[in-house]
Image (cartoon, helix red, strand yellow):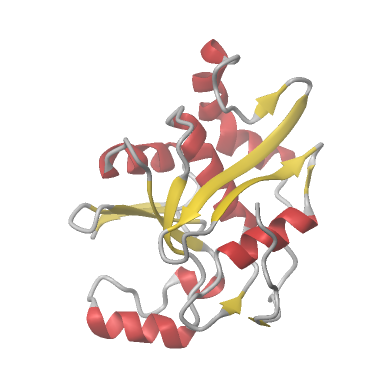
Length: 200
């Protein structure tokens, strides 16, 4: 991946990236393991060799940037990888960066694994500043006033070769946050807030 210029305005994170307990992580990835196990040699699974890794593959639908990043290995998050992902998922309109909640990254990675695909997600929206969210809200009633995008806890994605329904079903199987289906706009919203689902 090409190194980026990090000379953007970075907002101070409210908290450090959240380290989930082993039990919670096992809960998130349980379904992934069941699906990946029968085709272990061919799956882009979370468990590779003797080590447990988590990987995020995305293209940015607005900037054209590409990321293919192992962000968790040997029982811990990798700070340098999280920095790259935070920048990748920045608010492009405002050119601002915020820490993306690692629970959202885990949901994205687990859902991707459940679909057993190699194609990357297309990211439509990651972090949004309050100003950007307000601008989008004026143009669309589907944008929440208190959107979790503003907290770095949500992502809107597409996946080539998979329908909105299939992506949403995989995200919902993680049972770890919110899942919104936007069929008309052809994307799925995933977040690490309360478990819920809706149609946009």
